[in-house]
Image 1 (cartoon, helix red, strand yellow):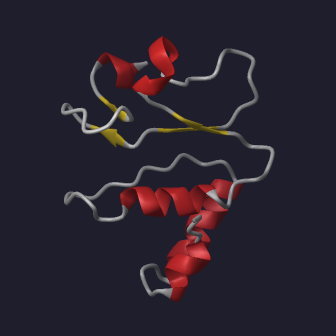
Image 2 (spheres, helix red, strand yellow):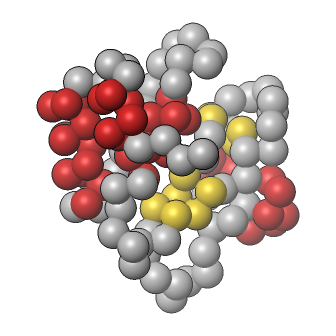
Length: 105
């Protein structure tokens, strides 16, 4: 199931003005950083919903160790798009949590 910004507005998780700001930022291909202290605060849900607003031609690359050495970073010359990682954390809860040298790449 894909959750959209409209869904987040409908369930009163997100104010319409904030949703409009996120949609405009993604449409303009701006960088996004979603931060919250507690686990399970909805960071990934919000980021995923925002990425649904990107133009169809803009790829989304979900980075992680599951991709091996490349981490899923597209090769030079690939169409520009979004790079997304689930967490920057020293304890790898999943293969999409990156830390140290992997983040600096």
